[in-house]
Length: 231
Picture 1 (cartoon, rainbow, N blue to C red):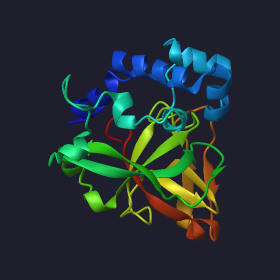
Picture 2 (cartoon, rainbow, N blue to C red):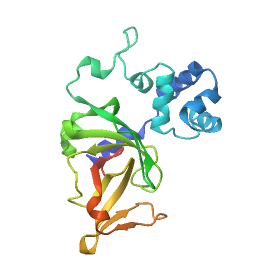
Picture 3 (cartoon, rainbow, N blue to C red):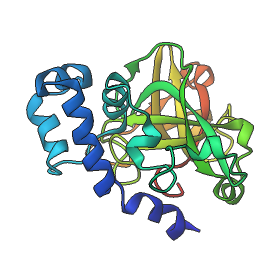
Picture 4 (cartoon, rainbow, N blue to C red):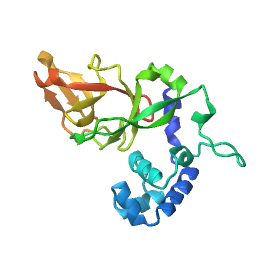
């Protein structure tokens, strides 16, 4: 299953994506405007356009919506030529679940302040994969990761699948943590005397150790089970 899950990310972005991404930029008018909407420099947006850098998901969402296009269209999810484009969701495909994408960017390092994480969109995810991952559809959520401290396990800009049944770290693994208005993603390990260790998979970052009462007050949004491949 791992190879199948990882393979879904291996060919993205493809030629269709880049062609339509250029159409998005053309619709916005100027590269500078696109950069301001994306929150990046014009030079960086140009690198995405020219395939010199892989674009992170969240800026792509903002640019696509600003250009009055859909994410399904950008990804090339449509019917054959001559038929009006229609998303898989509209076709009622029973094999596809549409998982809420939370309006939040989780940080792999220090917390990034976020508003209340309401769903901003729904993204397609194969129900077979949910079953193999053991995640009931009603407990599945998607969110974006920002930062490199969880690399190589999870890359900066990755979309992560969250199993929200895990409100306490019953087993060691990668979790989404809530710290006030901040959302973070860290690997959690258990230390001595009830201590909890927040671990970065990138060895350039040091682990954090929480003792009581900080460990007891730690809030868990859920367990990360997939990010372009099984975690």
